[in-house]
Image (cartoon, rainbow, N blue to C red; front, side):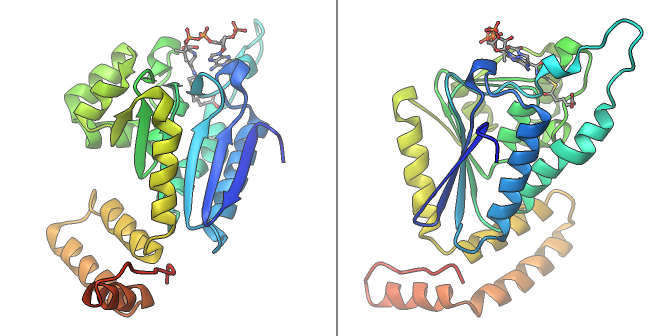
Length: 262
Ligand code: T3D
């Protein structure tokens, strides 16, 4: 494992830190492969009940490391489709399909794929000084890593178009007001707040959270009828879970529930 991705596990919470601070945590191929590996392990590992992703230093992530994309005159252009297919898209898919909550703490600027990977999180907190930049426009690319999917769904087409075409930074407070993220937090409290929330989720009914996530993700393309059918099926399964029995018992006995995530 490269030291550009740091992983720490404690009490069901896996913290993943993007760690190339001198380049604002921009992704090299090696770093992105490592990120994908740890995401896949997090999804498969039952002892991981919630994932928290943040960045080291003053930035969250500046997207692709452009040092790896300069082309000598007459040289062959890189195949960005290959890069998306094999590295960026798998990371977005892993975050969205992971059957457990993914909390993102955006500690500083999030640009390009770095911004959109952040938006793939289930609960996105950002330091008040953080900025979201669809910087693709500045280098002739389109928003990738789910940007053209998440942006219009979260903030509407007009704002998505403005963010994508102008490539101007959007501050954390405005991002929260627009519904792009869950909450903007004072810089010095970001990690504490996001960790507390992520830890609380890790002690929660995580199998139920997985079903909630699945249902909300499916709602973007389902009809109301399809969605009602899906809710019926998921709720039927949730009703058979130990966590549901425990939640009801704890409520009736006026005590705190102890959820096991199953
Ligand atoms: O290529 C593929 O595989 C396809 C997928 C593409 C996905 C993408 O992400 S494309 C978009 C790539 N990212 C960008 O275009 C963002 C480039 N960076 C910026 O626009 C700015 O750095 C920021 C807005 C993010 C932050 O600005 P600022 O003023 O706070 O910091 P800075 O001074 O520009 O950056 C600090 C250092 O990080 C600086 O290095 P230096 O001068 O101190 O040695 C800068 O060059 C470096 N850095 C920032 N972003 C990148 C980077 N180095 C390489 N690649 C970067 N993306």
